Length: 170
Image (cartoon, rainbow, N blue to C red; front, side, top):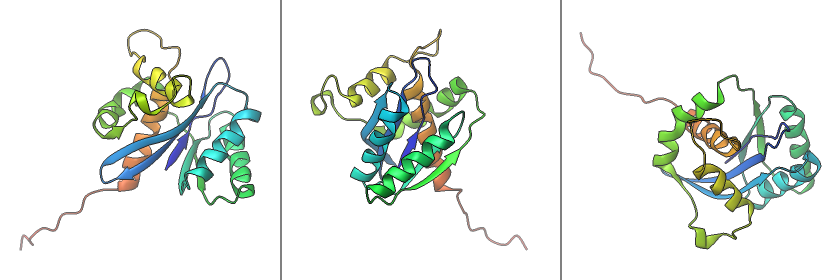
């Protein structure tokens, strides 16, 4: 699975984590975490989706995100990939979304050890932005925590509710 939080300018990163689900665990295997223009990040996102054979991806469709998702989808098809890309507009407050989903991320998301990725890689950039985020004061780089919150919402939304069989009361 993957989600994508597209950059909206002003120093934002395009963030696309690639997640593998194993039971209740969410392994963050790879990512795009890049402040470059869409001309550079669209092919990066498509290549990650195809390389990891991502079956489903959700793109935030605020601002230019909808067109961005369409362009990534075109690239995925050109590369021979089969990712079902959906779009979702978010109206929730970013900080609230991060706080509400932080417990799930802390409990279920698993990240690579530092020895398993290059210090200047996009994975390293992702980890740095994630671990340096703070809710006190203004965080300059909140794209990664926001993206992890979106991924948590995407995964928990897929799991649905719980069904219980009850004995008839009469």
